[in-house]
Length: 270
Image (tube, rainbow, N blue to C red; front, side):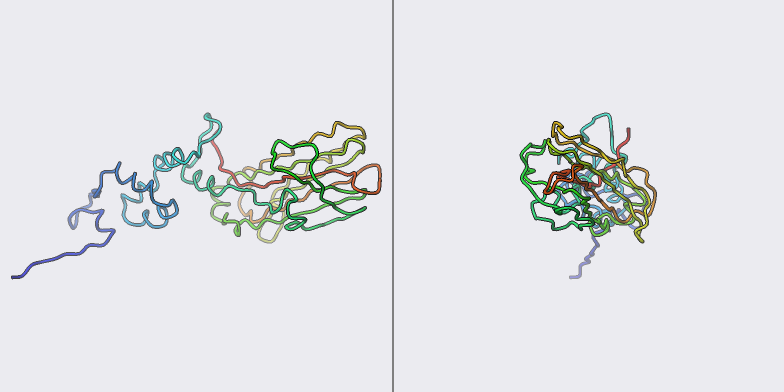
């Protein structure tokens, strides 16, 4: 007795009978969305999205990624601001981290390029006046001639490729903590540059030098800046900071720096 059998591909399961242009789901949409919620996010985009038109529409939907963000606690701190694209927001949130290596002086000077090492040279000391981030236990300190150090961040190597940087242009947020000694005047300087593939400057943040008088209150202060609408072509970020004391005292009486950061963050509607 003969019988007929048929096979279908994974993609065919999303369609009805031959020659039909109507796409019908095998699962109800709500059930399919729940399945997508439990599939690794990268596979949703790189695998599920390619199966058929219906799966593509679901994988591209704002509702899917908004709900995924809600479940994983990836919500904007300010409820009045909403992501421009919930899928991009999700991936930028899970990738978000400090791109600077060894920002808290925990691994000596590894990760940093010493550009200037004046006076008695850079040194690392223990924190005595605490910072808001209590995990910071050490800082870099300058001497009586200029001390400057730098890091160059290759964005593609960190997972932020040309399409993302050119098309989405997420915010690039920098932060640096600095403090003087109470008994000695000092100077603090910072320069952060966005560079193209040839390492030419596209945009730069270089505020005026900050001066501290002798006999100051010795509080840690934060320098922050956000790059936005920087245009196409950003491939590197160069972070440079340092300073010196103003009394020319032997030893390490100059500006102190620690807990520096460069982060790529989702752009928000305001």
